Image 1 (cartoon, rainbow, N blue to C red):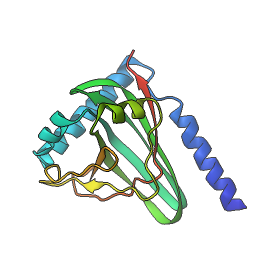
Image 2: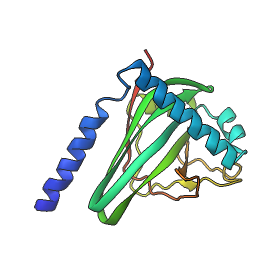
Image 3: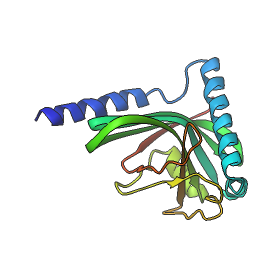
Length: 180
């Protein structure tokens, strides 16, 4: 019972945080876009084949710093930017609540590549989430060349030190707000 209450609390906090998808100030918007641009530059440097992946994609969401932690139960949260045709079109949030054996914390970059315009529209409309077993490909040289789409989506992760990191992204939920 106690664990269930804690889980409900974590989900509630993540949901409330997710209500503020777009940064409130012009400086906040500039900061997240600058962080996202830096994460994309680092990703392209780690794997030059991503240039082709991004140019063929209908869109991609970049979360430059996803924080994830837990001690028996846990969660993850990150803010990002959605791109279409190489241009930032809006802001997005990622949230995740988890149960099970886990201890510690980490920060990583997550890039979600959408194969079709319909995949992008589903993301914008809140009709997009990862199933429990979804995983991401660790970003390393050549990973983009071997990218495979599952249900129209490919996911790449990289820890903030630039090292390869494989992540379970199952259960992640997303919110989106267009630029104003």
